[in-house]
Length: 583
Image (tube, rainbow, N blue to C red):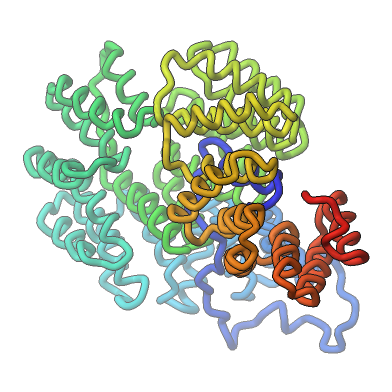
């Protein structure tokens, strides 16, 4: 295992589900032969004016690289006004506008872009979305019929056609088009999700119920939107008892899920209006398709394309808070906490994600350096809902991230007081408090929390590793600690930090040759970690490979370790290992 700070970083912050990895956007073709602002650039590489098309283009490119979509779009549009025939500028403005959520403005650029290259996917999908929003379903079908049909279009043409036919009331054609995605390598899951939704839009109750059951039954954890969709369907069929039973069965596996909790509260509330379906019409159906495909693209490294699909989903359905939450998560993953804050602020406080969005706002506010404000937000939330521990847990995690250990232990303790009975899922809270206790030099309390966490989750590799490494580092319970770490390695064999813990435990046991094997593997798995590199140097020294040990220690210094470790490593380089006190 690495140092204590690295072990602490292995604890995920709350409610964080990073679904998307940043990747390059599918490029729009660079339209050769068109007049371009590039033609007006100085061939001698001379100075350019910031207010020139070229200057605005460079500013736009820089803003886009920084994920500052608002300024990127504005600079592109400014340049485009000076050079309206530039396809390159139109492409840049188009993508930045969609990424900024200004899809209506982007729509105005699609005719020019499609004139240059009719097969480009994003302008075509954006035009189709605008036509769907205008309920011009025949125009959408004409767009699909015009082609192209290969590549990414083969996946999304059926979605467009399915919901356009649904808008026209053509059930057979709608289902036939959706059926084409059943075995698609990327969108087969999207097909399973959309099938009952499309049938419901087509007002076919019996097939709708059958499709929902096919998607849900036999799965321990079905998609929460599928569960919510079926519960809503059952409520509309005056079968509220069945809806409640469905939700409660799923709560066993996912007890803190905000969508399921919100659905149960809906059942408990007397309403004058009937329950609305998950998706009410063909336009909302295409929005759902864009949202579902964004999730699928995210899992398959779809990168920026997933972000743009989410913006199209919100263009079609502005109340789709699921898309807002996922977009906020994307922005957080890029450290664009200002954008994340703005997106979370748009989530309706009455939606299933109302509390989660407020918690994420507080987290983003803190990441923007406004810690006092974030604390006030979380304190207000904790006071307003004294039965929920979530605001206090977020506050505890925030303090832990700032290494304010006494404050973290206080908030974890306050959160635990709001939980009437500890269950297996609460191991994370005990682990978090245990880390905070251990880092504030109250190891006995931290040890008790971690042992309790292992009672709740006996095979939790993070806890096995953290407690095992702590014991090894303190020369306590080394045999037991080694067995715990060995179990953690079995559970997570490719985690370099855990493999390092095993190597270090073997080192403490004097089994230096075995330690070398594990520590070499740890360095391979997690290169660039000064602590693991230092450990390998120590092990090399003990087996008589002094020159290799010195090489690893020099490497560790080059990796910029914390000051205490740097001083220790330098002493070993100067004097060798034996004169240095054991760690």
